[in-house]
Length: 418
Image (tube, rainbow, N blue to C red; front, side):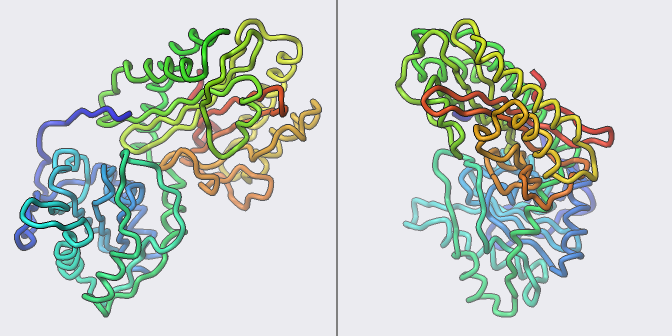
């Protein structure tokens, strides 16, 4: 479910407006909304020896411009000189005001005058932008590898190799370079502006959990419980700084919760029985910045077995949190949680890594930092990820507690501390 609100007003001018591209609308230049992110991208381009990044996947456009596209029909270009150009569909004009792009060009992916598609429609604006920015003989980092992409709408466009083909045919001097690793490294460390967005998404989810947990009881079905959390989420007012918000809630109870070690969550038609473990999983976002949250309840009173599981998970959580600090290996965080569960006799039941990077996507098990027994990643201030110690007994049930955390100079901030 998507919730929309719009921000009125225009951006202040900085210098003179850039010239419009032919037959297209261009807004005046504006100061960067996130100067720290802007500087990091310029540095990354210089380190990698690239003249520009060019991308169309929503999370990458968000990274480069601060704007989270709706239908994935926008293209962002960011040069090593710090120029930022956004090509955006005409009907996303109002939302695109959130962008920090100095120049924003609109186009029409569809028209009554002709049957066309986004790839054909963006052909002219893309070529003009690349040439205008002086990239005709440049090395440009692009999305040429495998990416995990958070859904930005119910239907999304994927240009695939189309943009590359347009550039090959029309700008033969341009060299395309796979920038997969560059994008992932940039997304791993959040700026204060981006952290604020994740905090906002977490607060909206917190309100939903606080209300929805009272609906967890025997006799209700998994869809009814998931719907109660979802409904509470939809009724929660957006934070002032959030313009668009998603929330996905899943409920898995009894034996179904034992299958929650899978890479995805799944609500089924099962009716909850007294004493069942009931796991509620949430992925929520604010303007493209995501959370990954799980809480486990008991329908009624916890029995001794569940008390033991709960105590072990909370101890493992605290052990992981206590070692998080800049400079520590991500695998040491996993080890801290895993050793506790091993000591309590639940090692075999902890069936996945202790966490992964969260922020530009909710569920990306290769998101940096990977809190995994074999992880090569080292924690840095500004990294955000989840900590999710868990125990799964096939045929009985599963229990997981998943928080989103941020690395700070002092150690760790739990963004979902509720």
